[in-house]
Image 1 (cartoon, rainbow, N blue to C red):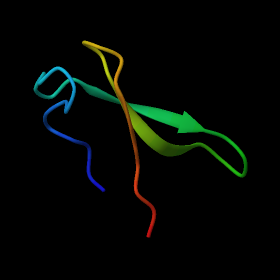
Image 2 (image 1 turned 60 degrees about the horizontal axis):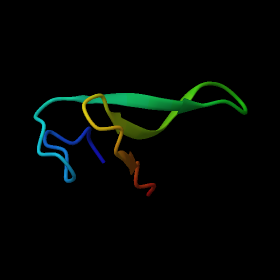
Image 3 (image 1 turned 90 degrees about the horizontal axis):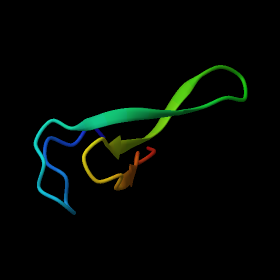
Length: 45
């Protein structure tokens, strides 16, 4: 999944930042809207 362009909760555009997790190295696990705090999980293949 690519980074969302519009927040599904508040409608802000291009407001998502990456959320990271560790465990064998840093990896992106999802995205957080900087406007409202909404989180979107990254889909895994």
